[in-house]
Image (cartoon, rainbow, N blue to C red):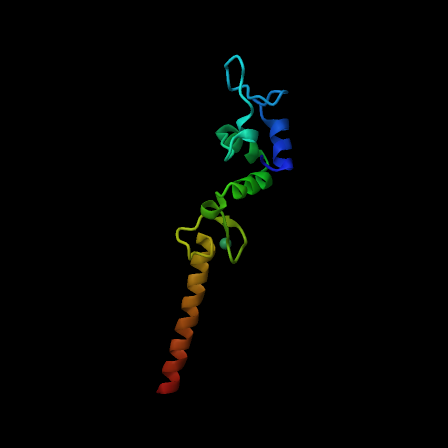
Length: 120
Ligand SMILES: [Zn+2]
């Protein structure tokens, strides 16, 4: 089961959530219980991609809870925004990363120049 807030949000906002907890997308006579609530791991593409993103907070938490966060959401060390890391060592989003690299390079260059002066 997704957490209470997420479940409540789906019940309230999913256009296919039937009052008895079934999914209106299933057209068979007996119907099928809402896959968002009952399948493990919760696989309802519709709920996940079309309903939940209306609440970005819930959506982010939900993705984290089903383990997507490992690949899709690392928080940037500088700005704190979630980003998709291209490697396990990446700590910053691409814009902060570029900024950080420039800053580091400036530092190296300054040290290099200082050393040069002192040695002459
Ligand atoms: Zn950043």
